Length: 244
Image (cartoon, rainbow, N blue to C red; front, side):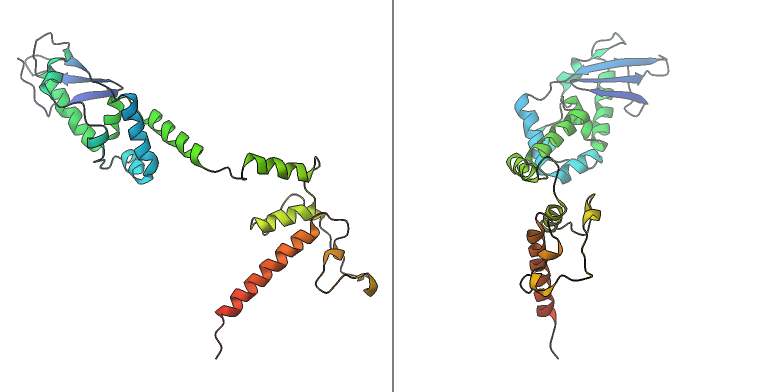
């Protein structure tokens, strides 16, 4: 058996189901030995268990990607490297049986995995790209649609008509969604005529401002939402005041 020092320089390549590396020979035997080890990958159920765990714990995913501790791997995806049988089954270009190159490769790989646990999942058949794709796909599937359900979106589109929402409808929707402070593409179409005022007999009841927006669809709803919102804020302000 050719003696090998575990501290000697070594190149490592982690692939799904395969660990490869170059081990430097002893001084009396210049050159490198190429060693390859085949490892058993996770089955479908184990892969899903790992993905499910990371889907529920984004902090664990962050720590894994950052190369920090991942103690949960010991339970869900144990390291496939320990074991003399694995070293004995290695292929080495030195041509010797039971050489020490495989043991040196395993020792270096274990040290590398301790610093970068994501490589352990790569060996087990769950590399970074597949891992992120599985987790992100699950998150996207679980997230609610931004605009509500498809039925709600279709209903709103039908109500707005082919020409899109009127300025009044846009204001009403913006007020309901809390984005009234954000200007929209049709905001410039709003025009309020304050001078000259309409005759007194043409004004509605006190507090009814819809007459200031004649012919604008949704004006009453928009003004109602604004009025209720202003009243709510005024009440909250009143309650926060302390009388001397």
